[in-house]
Image (cartoon, rainbow, N blue to C red):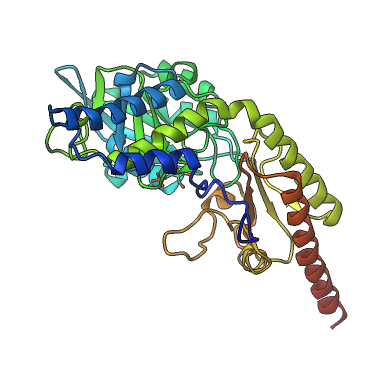
Length: 390
Ligand code: PLP
């Protein structure tokens, strides 16, 4: 980066793309309300239409199936609800299943009561236990309502990709609904509710180079929709009230247009990550790389160094000019114990460091990271030797 720092925390947020900044700048100058019928209103409306087309293209759905909102957390609170409508009929959902490694946006259960939520276990690599899924669905009393599974496409800490299609087949066999948190998959994996077997996808603008505070709920069809979370003036076809965040949507548009092509460069990102992990193994043969037996996102690496708390390591990296995460970013800025590591049966007390790369990282960045990693690791070894001698 220009300030001499190295940013390796794309899963927390990706730096704003220049195209997104330009689009937001232009949208800021538009005077009209997108709901107004005059020329100024229509001009604002056209920004939203273009963005809806871009997000729809990214997810391979018709544009009418994209509902903009303030981000993935709001989308989760919108769709994780017992109350749906299918055309004019009410549809009741009486149980929410979530994997133990979901992002808190999903884990919190949206608008379900706590006793309606079942947390499903994962294996040592963090993949959903499909037998446990099937067992809970088999025991669900469908006369009370349908069951819904909330499952991430890929984990934000480990990058581990969930067996979404296999889970969808099980959910379908029990006439359940599937909500896929696709936040970390956008621009990194193919997204299509049809191919994934999902009823809904959740997206966030700031993970793909758009601004923070904008996202979308994408539905597999137009008839089944959750009760609105925000009621108001009928915007977003009544699914999300309130004057649209035009500037945010304009930025999200540019980011989504970019993400459509981002898959083309993903092999290059994977080779940087693989080079980085090989380098870490050379420097610290006892490094523990989490989730490596599962398919992972090409850009993510989650590792622990025995004897070195992730919290301490993260501060050390920061002081050396490298931005990485110790697990997920907490709103308080504090580092909490990783519920993902705990669910995988790993040493959650030790914690782990997440490196998440973006398309603009280079081999030089990886060499810089490995230099710093080597320094921090050498201090760890020296401290361990001193402790052994004492
Ligand atoms: N889901 C996943 C997997 C995430 O990584 C995040 C962000 O960290 C969210 C949901 C929440 O996204 P937002 O910041 O748009 O609310």
